[in-house]
Each structure stands twice: as C-alpha cells, then as structure tokens.
Amino acid sequence: MKTFYYVHTGHRIGLDRFRRACAIINSLGDIDITLLCSDFRIAQIARDFGIEKSVGIDVVRNIPQISNHGDQLIFDSDEANPIMLEDMKQYFSTFIHIKNDEIAIDETYFEKKEKTIELTYFFGDDDYEKDLEKNLDLLEGLDADLQLGFYYFLDYEDMLKKKFKNYHEFEDYEETIKTTNVLISASPQAVLESLACGNKPIYIQREDYTDCFISLFEDLDIPIIRNFDKNHLKVILGTINNHNYKKIELNSNKINEFIKENLNL
Image (tube, helix red, strand yellow):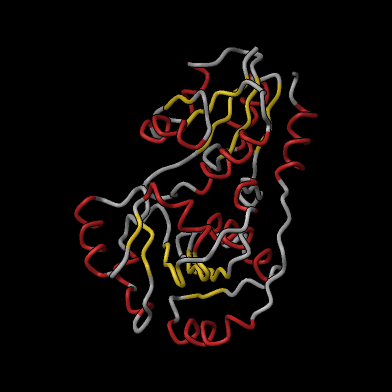
C-alpha cells in the first residue's frame, strides 16, 4: 500500500498549495509519501523543497492510473466535484481532504533572521491576467523590491524587472520572505510565512482569489488592502512600525498528528 499527496498548482492558481504541501510532507518525517503535482515542472523541482518523491500528472482524474485500489491519498485541491470526491473515498483506503483555508507553515520560517530588505512586493507565483502590471501605481513613490513568481512568462518577467530597482528570482523566494521587514503580497501563504518570521505582512485581496483567509487575517491583525487601494496602503505603511501583529504558532504538528492518526502506517 502506497501513500500519495496530490496538490493542485498552475498558471491561474499559483504555488500556495504546493508550498503548504511541502510543509506538511516535511513535517511528517520518514513517512513514505509520493507527491503528485498537476504541473510536471513543479514535480521536477520538488526535491529543492525537501520532497524526495514527486510525479507530474496532467489531470486530476488520472490519479488512479498511477495508484492502486486501497492506496492512501491526501488531497489538496478544490478541483473535484462531490461525485469525484465520493469515488476517491471509495477507491482509496484512506482519503484526507486538505481544505483551501488550512494553514501549514514550514518550521524554518519561525527562525528569526536579520532584516536586510525594508520593503518587498510579491504579487504571487501566478499572474496570468497581468494584474501586477495593471496596478503598478499601487507602489507609486515606494522603493519596493520585487519578488518574482514561478509562472510569469519570460517577456512579462523581463518587463517587470525593468520597473524595479531590485528584484529577486523565484529561487530566492524563501530568503526574501525571511529577510524582508515589510512584505506586501496577494499570496496568503507568503503572508503567513512572513508573519511567522516576525515580519510585517500586508495582504492584497485579489478578485480572482478566494477570500477565505480574510477572517483569519483580521484575527491576526494583518492589514488588508482591497481593490489595490494605494491611499489605504500609504496609510498602513505610515503606521506600520507601530502596528501590533498577533503571533502565529507553529501548527504543522497539529496537521502532522491528524494525518498520522488517519493513515495506516
């Protein structure tokens, strides 16, 4: 019996689920898990995130083609309709569904590092509609670094690099998050990782992203920007050094324990 973890990634949804999946799998230690990615390129770089086994699959319904009846599946995606979810529960001996608003942060983000970057903008790993470019005036008058995303097209990426004095490649993501004092981001995962580092994140709510993290961010006193309101952003930045964030705890152990209790090990 094998154990698989399927994660949904792509040009329109980014890598938040992938980064969360890596945090969960790494927290499970020696449990033999194969990561299934809906993007072959992500499967190829998963080892850089501590994942030993990863396989790319083109569509979610092909999961049974590389698994057997009675195997175990951790499913991190909203792709499946109720009928497909029920079929999966029948096919796999154990089926664990990770919901969109579940939180898992790699423990390395709780290690405090010197802040060498004052302000960074990370829109997200995906920007198919080029919303970052359309709303660049949000950063008008701000000397912000740019953290590039994985799914940016090459010509788009080259254009963005010319708009910022300093930019950081996809491979520099972890270091950038850890060493940035103030992070402006439309990625819920990046915002949570920044907070774990003891930094000062500001969340941009995208129209094409779920708003299921809003209540959590409000509870954590994370400032939220809607409609790319640059005036609101300037007000927040003007008082950011006196803003009191609530601390977020290392919670991967809770997910770890839940998964271990439900898997047949």
